[in-house]
Length: 316
Image: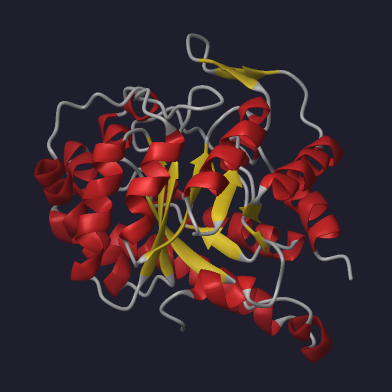
């Protein structure tokens, strides 16, 4: 596996197709995720469902599976009475489930089908410190933690995910530059693996903490193991301006995987608004024109959305 598998795919294809939502897709299949562990809870209870969702995204055209480890932390599992060894096993299982789905899917294709697309990757989801708190902090930032404290939080989990065989690290929904810098500083401790860093953003210019996205991606420019930068878990209407701002501030590939466009009601824990795969794909083409070369979906997106994106992205 290339030390920068993103660059390897983009050297051959104009767009690297990311997957879509895992947690909300699991909910659509009957899982109750009203739990601080979120999709990590399903790792313990119904792992076969996670594997099935990964498989369906590959079948829809995704070039990458983002694992069910976003909310999987030693601290979060400890609150449920699980020791470090068991927590490590579950994090490694998240990688194994995605790899099994990838291998089964890839082996089901003919040689002609394999030649028409890249062999998919397994990206280990590294959720932000705020996700572990399970109080919405990943959409606010302002943790009051130093870079060193955030490095100490991320280091052991990143070690487990790398050791489990992930192709790269998906450091996602990062609300602030301090946390992004902590991750970038940690990467040299894991030679031979690349990561992406994507920020949660609150408007057309700023990350969730209120810093300019353009400033954040510019700071990450010198981090050699950060293979792509961008935006996720953000409202689609903000994406074109954010992509343009990021594109102007970095030479790295710019990635985007926003929410579906439905709005979340935190009080009643439900979503409102229409979901339309064709509309999502039309928006994805616009994001590509603005400068994004890795495109997928976050909350409430589905295999249907990714299939629609793949339909235009893989046109000859």
